[in-house]
Amino acid sequence: MPRGRLDRLSGTKKHQGVVAIVPPVEYMPQEAFLGLVVEKKGVGLVLHDIEDPGNIGAIMRTAEFLGAVGVAISGAHTPGITEVSVKASAGAVFHLPACRLGNPKGFLKEFKGAGGWVAGVELRGQDIVSVDLPRPLLLILGSEGRGLPEKLREKCDFILTIPGQGRTGSLNVAAAGAIALWAAMSGIREQ
Image (cartoon, rainbow, N blue to C red):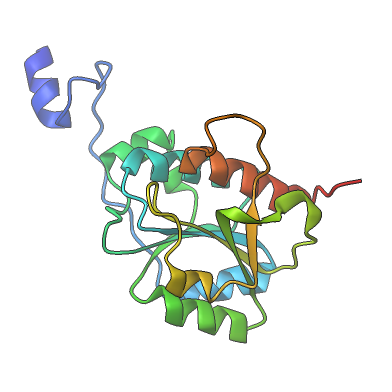
């Protein structure tokens, strides 16, 4: 097939000579996602107002690899799972349950009412390796530029931070999500 046709079909020149046509990712209902995390006493993620679909895909790849129960996507600025997310996830989006949250505050309240715990990942909080995190657990990651809004911080049982020593002062949200999820999944604690 001529390269120009692949460019048009894929919507990018970065297709590496391969284009696949797949059905859109189906989101599971909120109630089913909540029940899944609670039933498995697992760890899930809430991605709130994450604007870069590449970050969404990278987080989903890590979540699937580490054995997270699933990912919930919320916020008006979050594009959801797009072609870019699929590529960045290396296909993990097809193996990891995902849902779209209409009202994250209501969902978090319902999750906590079912015995769940909520931890926000922010720049200022408790050192993530010093906290014994209960399950079922949802880790909330906020916008690349703004972090978590106050309305969601208030719903958190824990505000966690990843200790750093560098001068940049912060991590990319996908990198922060990977570290936080690994710490929560492995149960690593300070000795």
